[in-house]
Length: 337
Image 1 (cartoon, rainbow, N blue to C red):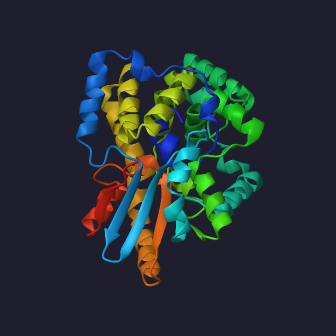
Image 2 (image 1 turned 60 degrees about the horizontal axis):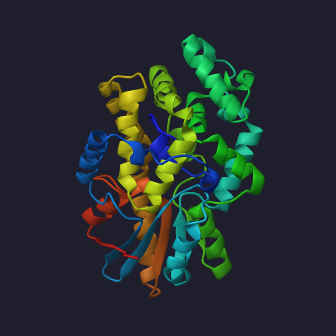
Image 3 (image 1 turned 30 degrees about the vertical axis):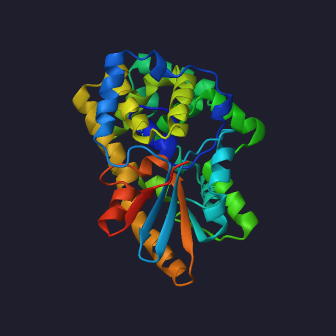
């Protein structure tokens, strides 16, 4: 998913599916001015565990193999899936953000209660945005298969998420239903007879934005809107960064792009990015530690380890899963290729 307020976190931090491998665009890092690239790389270097997709956490006999996932389909997933097959087949359980049952329950809820995505009573988006902003938004949503009459009543968090998905990704998903790495992990685990457990309830997504102010909701759209026009380039840029293991580079790329293109001040962008990181990643990371460590403890009693697969942006940082485990006495080891 694209950038602005939430796009980095939504791109690698929330479940979804699409086909980035079919998107045609340019890697924006390759055409970026050297000074801007240097600023991004400097910001990345300060972040713990900023690079790497595959990790092992060990505490005594307890072992967790951790995979930083990418929620959109790409042919390069097959090599990574093969790489982690041995620890997966030996795992006592696979833990993911949402398993098949949770995804089915979410789909059912959205079908039965459209107000989860649509606001039937509040002011419409054309009423909350400036005319030129609404025109740009309605054009972008039309490219994503949502006519203006529908987009006008969508909840802002859902609109920002939709803006983060390039039209080519959405078309690829509609054509063949291809899966991201987490879905591939779940399917492989089931084939192997490895149980799958969720890290959080099916309705988590609806609680992520509930304490945002109306102004923050609209700024979330404003911060995401400029990049919707070149979303295919973003898809290529962020996908390439993921497969190179440059996890936090994805987040900082979004920050600096928002500085230049969102129309918001640097302070406003920083505030929104802080809010996004706290809501979409930090709080969830903290909640995941208990089920991760509990599963590892139970597995160790049977002489086994566990595997966990979740969005790669949950790995880095002082409040990332790896640092939180480290603070609880786990030894963190990066798994090389």
